[in-house]
Image 1 (tube, helix red, strand yellow):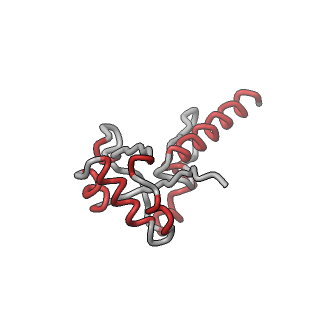
Image 2 (cartoon, one colour; image 1 turned 45 degrees about the vertical axis):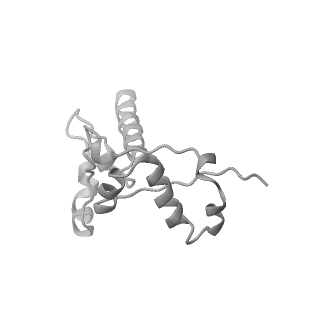
Image 3 (tube, helix red, strand yellow; image 1 turned 120 degrees about the vertical axis):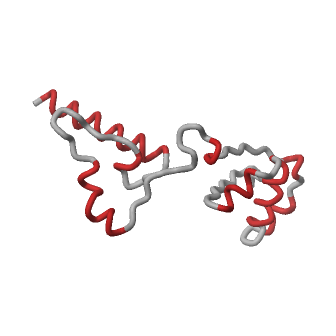
Length: 123
């Protein structure tokens, strides 16, 4: 069997700020410590054999680590309204998707809005 794999981790809030203060090597070592609680074999790999990519959403100039995350009550009231068109204006964005806060949600909603426009121009 292959010894290659991908481990993926997200940190938010205070945890993400703490990770931002670490070097790339320190981030990997910290994550390996966490992962080893459920995947003990991960500690068998020398850090020099690992490749990593890190991204700080806290330092992203556009999101500043923020995303729309309504309460359950807000969700019930507003979710369907957020994606309703207003005349010829169609709304898209991760906030109009069930996968809000993720690029996938933005893509899904963009496809939905494009399909709405396409349907309306065909009929």
